[in-house]
Length: 400
Image 1 (cartoon, one colour):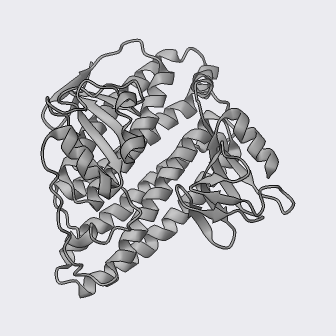
Image 2 (cartoon, helix red, strand yellow):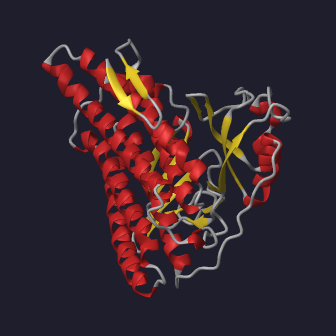
Image 3 (cartoon, one colour):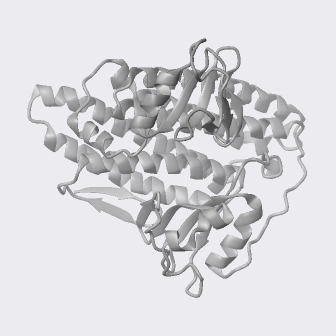
């Protein structure tokens, strides 16, 4: 039996038969949520979100240990060891991402030092993430998400639910809000207040942002947001590279890691220069921690996809996870005479194929453009990272 020391208690873990496939999928979803939550906690100076990161990090420790136990039990021969070694690498890299996210959250919890005006410097396009506890008399209590139709009505999404010690990741239309559920809500700033108040029955306390005491803080926060988005994309691509045994996707992970390293270096230099003029240089310590943790996450993404670059065979357990994937991610390079050249992208959807979403563009002269909900025009030479069904992405590749 293995024990983990958490914030308030010790979690005991003993071996039990479990699906490695299901563990890998849950670890992937947990890692992505951890990155999102930890950065949001810092950018919004929100200790409640930071505490949820710590809880989720403890959950990841349990998943990691169970995955290691299951993999050890599965090894019967040298060939098994060869096939399972990359899977073990995935487990270790995922735990590294979890630890880095925890370090980011502790910037808030340990009061390491952050400019109070970071929230005021956030770009308008950044959505707000809040933690809401469903009240007994909430109109949402006991109802399914599909019945509430939250996202269509308000633009606010429930990205995760914690029910006691259990986490419900990626809640769907049939997920029910129960009393005392801790719901993580993300959406436009103008809509999040009403949804929060309906869920909790309490007023939403909006903090009035303080004016920046540091010159050019807006540019620094823009850089943080960009680093966060690149790191999230790198982790997403790394998992996809492994799941689909795609060397081109693994190579793009390496390209993203190079970009994050360059951003982190420039960000660290900016922080040191800003410290010279700051009324209290200690307030910038957290930014240095943030930059270093971001680099750790992007390095772990490369580690995740290392088995693909080394041309190691994908274990059948990974292939099983692929078969259950509703959507896949592909890398598409646009040729001069391709149909995609000159096509418009509106809110991430290319005009030539509305069933595919473009996540990012790597443009030779400009680097990475993160599309998301933005607009762009596809140019020859662009490398597109797109998401869709198996059939739609195959057709999309042909258009390039």
